[in-house]
Image 1 (spheres, one colour):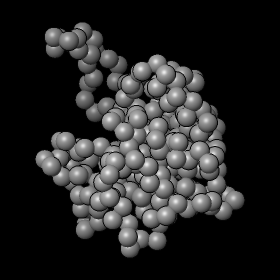
Image 2 (cartoon, one colour):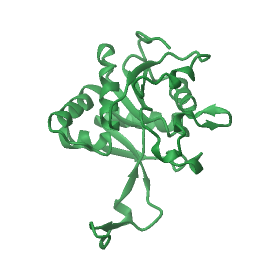
Image 3 (cartoon, one colour):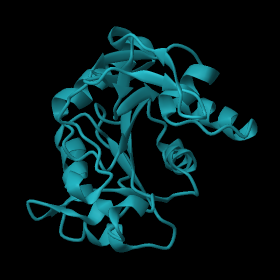
Length: 225
């Protein structure tokens, strides 16, 4: 699909980066974003949610360089997508996605894993409002199991208080200029972070949380679909 240019006056301040450039190495040769849920490809299901919420002016999707299979999913869709080639890591792919938004200069950006197709508008709106209030906001869910800390030998060295240990989900929302600066700092320092919240926290400042959604699962293995 073509570049959407500019959205309406209300939407221009918010954008989304949906990451779909991974190799899906644990899916047994299946690109997980192309797996079907009720006959709909995972990536399309995810993008439809963001497009349908009425808050997103621009949607960027990162894809494996040279791979047009993801674009083909949108051939019959009335969705305007900005496509950005990914990198060797998720962090590099997100950075490329953020750069693709530079000329649109959104005020806020939501960064989401395409492999979380059960995201809802309610969660998207909650994260966006948190980002507007605090600058950075992510959804989190409580641990069902008792969390433990291990050393390199597999020995348990800590019994963590479940009340203060949570699991991070996406979308993660940020002021666009600040999360871009955080990624630029990570590149300068050659640091790889597990998620965007940690990159922001180390380079910019505090990240706040809102309740996540247990149904907002991430597809990693075949049985997740």
